Image 1: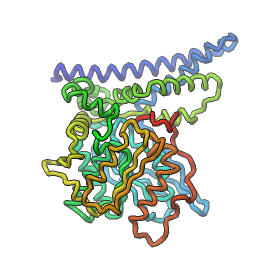
Image 2: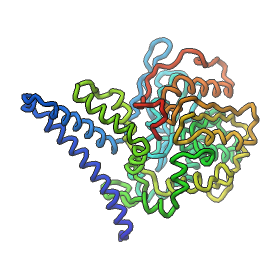
Image 3: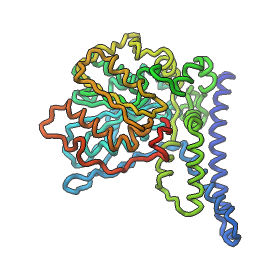
Amino acid sequence: MTSYKGLRGIMSYDAMETIRSTNEWLGSTAKAFGSYPAFALIPNPMFQLMAAWGRVAERSHARMIVKPDWDLPPIVSESGQDHIVYAEPVLRRDFGDLLHFRVARREPMARKVLLVAPMSGHYATLLRSTVVSLLPDCDVYVTDWHNARDIPVSAGKFDVEDYTQYLVDFIRHLGPGTNVIAVCQPAPLALAATAILAKQDPKAQPKSLILIGGPIDPDAQATEVTDFGNRVTMGELEHLVIQQVGFKYRGAGRMVYPGLAQLSSFIAMNAETHAKAFIDQVFAEARGEASDNDRHNKFYDEYLAVMDMTAEFYLSTVERIFKNNEIKNNIFTVNGTPVDITAIRDVALMTVEGANDDISAPGQCVAALDLCKGIPANRKTQHLEPNAGHYGIFAGKSWRLNIRPLVLDFIDEQIEASAPAKRRRGGPQPVDCGVSSPREEDGKIAV
């Protein structure tokens, strides 16, 4: 029998979904009402604005429960031939798959890259523009995490230790020569997974590990994220944000941190920016200047698409990574076995930070270099990107123009390839085809 607390959690979860559905319906109604042909005879812009508001509101709330498609463009070869890209799972797990982007009829690439996507409320497709920028030069894999609301309770738990073990399995499956790029939240766990392989299966270690904007040492510099983690007790956090999946989903009864709750936190952090973007889009719609795939829709189709995290993953991340600082203090354990970060010796390490990052501030990620005492100094490097925010360092303009070439050069230095790299720093730059934030250079968009 469902307990009172569980029933309350389900009611809270369904209440959020009801609010979302209602706003979607209101948007649809306003769009239909404002678009009624007879109103075209009335010389008042109110009806155009009503229809425009309806179109923006309906689309904004509808996309919150839809997993975006990868929808990757073909890769153009030097001969001018288009190579279709297929997203194919090569390892399937209950909570996430190892996805391979197979480029049809293309010779194997020297650079094999595993992109470790964050599990922080968004789908792995948040890295679509990162994938697009790497595909011409790399064989790319990504961790495709599943929405917790769709995973039956019978699948069991999933916390930071399980996440780390998934990474160990994925890296081991890809084998030697893999270059791991961990973005944001998974950076400390990717470091732990590498340390486990260094101890258990040295031959399966990645060739290089690139950590981008991750909280290796959350106390290095305070942000709103770290302040919140230190301010709230674990009991308060569980009471405030953990809810039980409603009856309409396969994961009914599973305790989760809802994606809609996470999204509200993201938006609240930069409410003025998002409000202005929304209002500007309403007026663009009213003027007939908006399009289905314009800059605003391209960004918010991804940004507003959120997924639930298992309660145990969210709570263990806050407690063990942020509160107890287990990675920085080198006291992290998996299944009762200590993970010794200093055991990493044969992996090249690079950290990337944004000077204006308000999610993982400068100093938090670069702490990995001092932590990895077993790696020779000549195999460690760091990069601090000026004027770049969190989004910009892995998918924005800063990534495309500055950081990506540095990452490829760093990978090339670790690879004993028979042919020279096709692209080097200072050479031809990739076409700017990534998702752009409304203000990607100010570092205000959170992940």
